[in-house]
Length: 258
Ligand code: CAA
Picture 1 (cartoon, protein in one colour):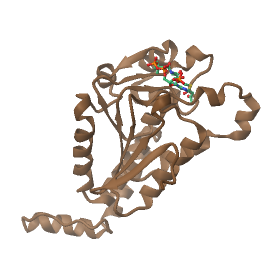
Picture 2 (cartoon, helix red, strand yellow; picture 1 turned 135 degrees about the horizontal axis):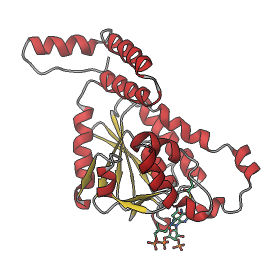
Picture 3 (cartoon, rainbow, N blue to C red; picture 1 turned 120 degrees about the vertical axis):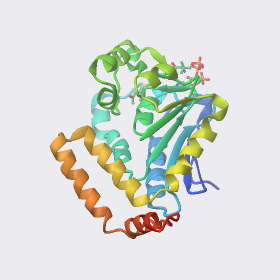
Picture 4 (cartoon, protein in one colour; picture 1 turned 90 degrees about the vertical axis):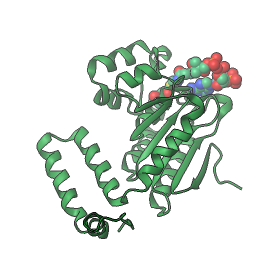
């Protein structure tokens, strides 16, 4: 029996799949679901067979937000003591690439979860938004921060203050998602791209991801220093020797992730 109640987890061809699995409530994210998601990510991060992680939702939504029923009666001090968002913070420490495959609604906490992914592929009919303002609250799991860093102040303001839902096309135009794909091809196209990443030397992928994330927070100078150290570090890997030797010998490299 699966140890998960709110998600479905599987593994195939070097890819780890995490599917949000509360389709009846549009994958509304409750607290035990967050624990399951974070633990599943961390398990895949430790699993040598998994090179890339794909996050998606079952049914007609990626996720329609945090579970409103669960939090509607909470008080401020309850939330402070619960300190639930530190659990979400652990998603930022996942070392392997994470691709979100978004269909249907990605709203509120669901959009915030999507923004934790390294790349987003979305169905053309997906919609994104931060409706928290309509509930008398605001995003609490990184929405105001991650979206603003991603698309800039003016656009983030429009999105966050209006609470409006935006189409995948708009999200594409604003650089929130990487691809807008016909809904029936979403998983196929996402997997195809993930498999391409899975065939690359894992240590390069790992340190590139880490360096790109640093670019968001560091000054250019600090970021350049960080990048340089990671570049040097890769010269300690067997894959660097193999990759460059294979190039010189005009053959395909065989990477081991070491
Ligand atoms: N929490 C709890 N239940 C939810 C939910 C949520 N965020 N979103 C949808 N559901 C439930 C509905 O209550 C409904 O349940 P019942 O069948 O038992 O009534 C079921 O999912 C299907 O939803 P609808 O009937 O509403 O479906 P629809 O197609 O008519 O509307 C929708 C879809 C526009 C997404 C609508 O469900 C909606 O507005 N959902 C809430 C979106 C929202 O406000 N999200 C932000 C939450 S706050 C947050 O996320 C805070 C944070 O930053 C951490």
